[in-house]
Every structure is written in structure tokens, then in C-alpha cells.
Image 1 (tube, rainbow, N blue to C red):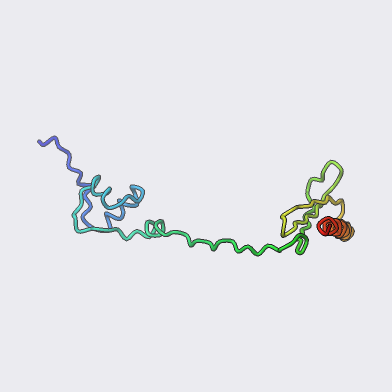
Image 2 (tube, helix red, strand yellow; image 1 turned 90 degrees about the horizontal axis):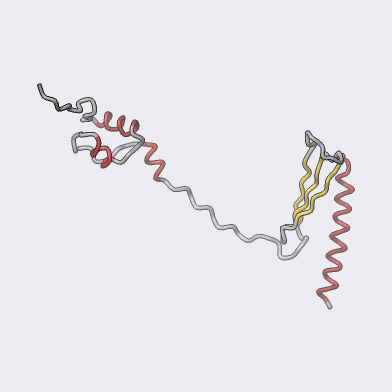
Length: 141
């Protein structure tokens, strides 16, 4: 009796069996499969959809177009968030956020009620008017 064990269960002569072993072994290349499992050499490539998709690269995003405004406070983004389930220590449940598009400077106002939004917007607008006026005075001298 011969003591050598022939790996007849691993011999893959058909493309479907090679592909099956390719999947089972974690999608190795054909050369790696040949080194582990003997199979006929007529198979030069595998038609594995996962491997093909894995070789694709994502499309490159276009570089960010610098479309920021040319001076401060020309465009200010705002957002109101809330109500928060858990209020703050001083019972604030909402917040209002302003972001200047030019400088990316951010202002955060805490609110107890959503009805305070219009008064805070007016307050913010008046503060900006004062600071822009002051800035223009400083630059002009």
C-alpha cells in the first residue's frame, strides 16, 4: 500500500471548481491557487466579480472649487437645532448656529424656546453691522 496521500479532493480541473476554491480561499490570484492546488494549466484568469470590482478605483473627486466669498459676512449660514431630549443645566433645549462663509468663524447661541430665534437673528445682525462698521473704519485710516 502506498503511504502517499494524493489530494484528489483538491484537484480542480474545471473552471467552476477553480472559481469555487478561489472563493473559499479568500480570492487569491491564479498563481497562488496553482501553488496550493494542482489544476490544469488551461485556466489563465478567473472571472470573479468581487475581484474585478476590488480592482476598480473610485472616481476622483474634483478638487474643491474655491467659491468662498471675497469678504466677511457677505454670506452667513445658519441652522437651528432642537429640541434636545436632555436640556442643559440652565434649561436650554435649542441652539442657533451661524457660520461666516468667508472666515468660517462660528457663533453659537443657546435658546430655551424656539420662539427666540427671530430675536437672536436680529441681535446677531446688529452685532455684525457694528463689527463691520468698526472694521471699515479701522481699514480706512
